[in-house]
Length: 169
Image 1 (cartoon, one colour):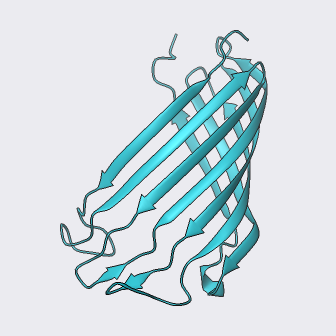
Image 2: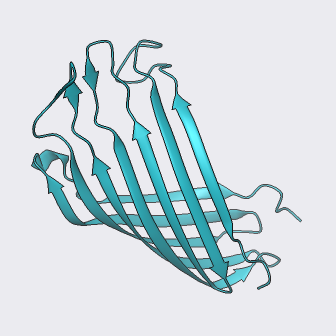
């Protein structure tokens, strides 16, 4: 297509304790995140590799949720990609390995928490106009290792909308 989308991305973030369902405003822990992502594209095919890490802080009661990380790879086939006509169809398949570290209370590990899961992510992306995309995905656990069966992921599903800035004609 002459528009190969090769890229790399590095991200670092701090999550301020501004308040949520689990704690009062400015009373929770400070959390940190980091990610690395790279993608190569050739013609109608592309591949991606990624890594994400979330470092959870300890709250005022001495509780620290286990840190979370995942790494993964993905492949995509995009048989329709015509931005001028507002046409796009991309079929994607990802595989990720997720690691949930054990929770801690007052610096001690809480037994029976944490675990790992290998997840398959089939995804479809399609255009709904010159500057809008829709996507649908399902995340299917294919192998899990959790001490607590309640922590196991059964599956996840999602749909979404993306507006592409600067693509209006």
